[in-house]
Image 1 (spheres, helix red, strand yellow):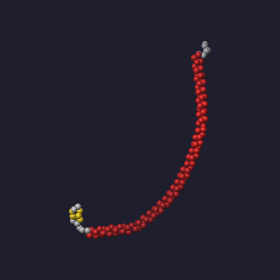
Image 2 (cartoon, rainbow, N blue to C red):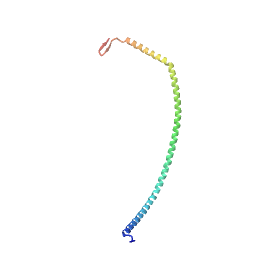
Image 3 (tube, rainbow, N blue to C red):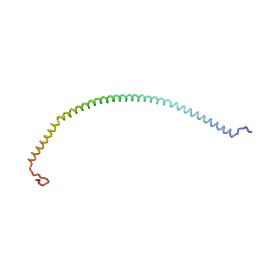
Image 4 (cartoon, rainbow, N blue to C red):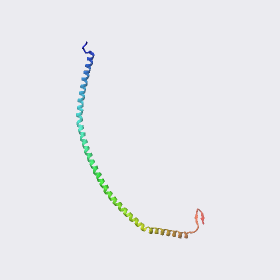
Amino acid sequence: MNNEIPSWWLAVYEIYFVVNIIFFVALIFAMVKLLEFMKQLTPKINELSGQVQGLIVKVDAVADRVEEVATSVKDTVESVGGRAKGVAGSAEIIAHTASRQFEKMSPLVVGAMTAMRLFRAFQDMRAARQQPEAVVIKGRKKK
């Protein structure tokens, strides 16, 4: 029996170790670059974080103001609504009173209108008697 390792296996094993060493060196280089990049980003991230906090405070202030305005509008609407109901009730009472007064006066109004029609008819009748009987329409006499 031959207990020796074949030479081709040793060559593959050596290539594996060399590639592995190159890979780890490249990985260490990438990690160093990544750390440098992270150090450059840290101040920018802190600055953005501060800006975001400022925006959050502003948004909260705007939200509080919007809530105050909404409450004010609600109170105003309720106040105006109550007044409008009062005005509508008063208008309804006035309309009801006016309709009762009109019901009382309607016979007089109808009588006055009838008298005006009779007077106008009387005037038309007098005017018709004073006009000549012959009327010219398109060059012909009407009898």
